[in-house]
Image 1 (tube, rainbow, N blue to C red):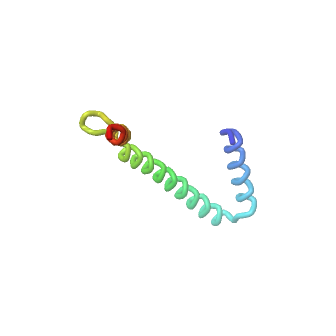
Image 2 (image 1 turned 90 degrees about the vertical axis):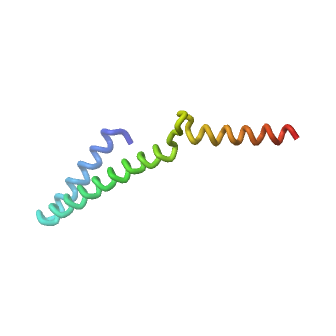
Amino acid sequence: MNPVEVTASVTALANALARTLSDEQLDLAAAVFTQLGDTLSTISVLRGICESNTSGTTDNNETTTDKSANAESSAMDTSNAE
């Protein structure tokens, strides 16, 4: 979906809910969906932080992924020497 389709869909859903819910129910739905959006944003930010920490760097700026690849390469070189 592109951004225009997403916003049009959200607007249509809001209008459908507004037609069927009382003012009190609509207020509650708005609060719940606001909390849902905030929680999803928090989860997304935390995932990004965790991914950054997982692929972090060492003191000599070599990433942990690079170290893994180098270790595998060294192991292959050793096995080929035998």
